[in-house]
Length: 326
Image 1 (cartoon, rainbow, N blue to C red):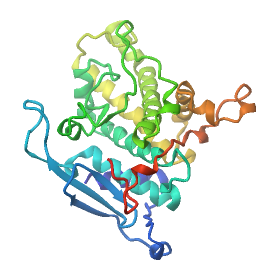
Image 2 (cartoon, helix red, strand yellow; image 1 turned 90 degrees about the vertical axis):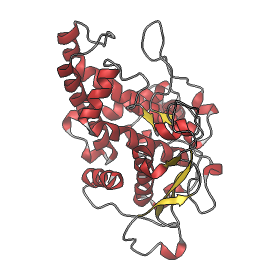
Image 3 (cartoon, rainbow, N blue to C red; image 1 turned 60 degrees about the horizontal axis):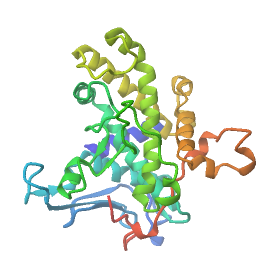
Image 4 (cartoon, helix red, strand yellow; image 1 turned 120 degrees about the vertical axis):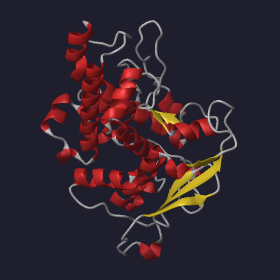
């Protein structure tokens, strides 16, 4: 169901059916009818997309979390994780768009794959208004806090003792003095070389864009309800939580349209400047500055099309061409 929902979202954005690719030489010129899914394909704490099999393989393992945090000793099935399914499906779809996109031709290739898939999984959190309203109410409107909306694969992260979630859309801590996110670390682009860590730079930039759009769209609602354009930490009325959830779902819809290409972004998305905001957030992380032509840094802004690029790590590739880490 989750895989079908992810595929349908891309087909609506692209305006065509999603196509699949294979890395096998004898299959390159053949039409691949379907993406295969193996829910119990691995007896390990992992899941990945195999380009040779054109399949998603999900693992299962024993929960090693502490008592009171999860189900110590119980079985954890990655095929039951909404985030992991959406992540791996997105990677298969991206490979279908360009057959050689998974080849580590540059230092950002696999990292972009991981970032793109994480972004898709994160934005899918905002497709269910009731869940979003519940989380907005629990965080009292402060979406920058760690919650079910910002984290990915919570059960997997707890079961493997990696934290509350496997990864997060928030790439930096909150300043206790101001209550806002601290400035991003511009040195990460030079130091983070592992595909998942490097991809988190792009994920953080896109999620920052979503937060910016959400805050702008809801500032008037917050002023009417609380007297402040920003959350004050006070409990939100139920009606306000549902209105904020509606705006959050609409804001992520603008980002999802942007995944289908420039032709899929409507006038409102252009007005909010989704691509412009992403480029600005990447400049803060010194990513766009490194990629822009030397003579163009002071005279023109980074074109939106140059926002797709994170580095990769060939060590993350498995023996069959699949990515051996979620």
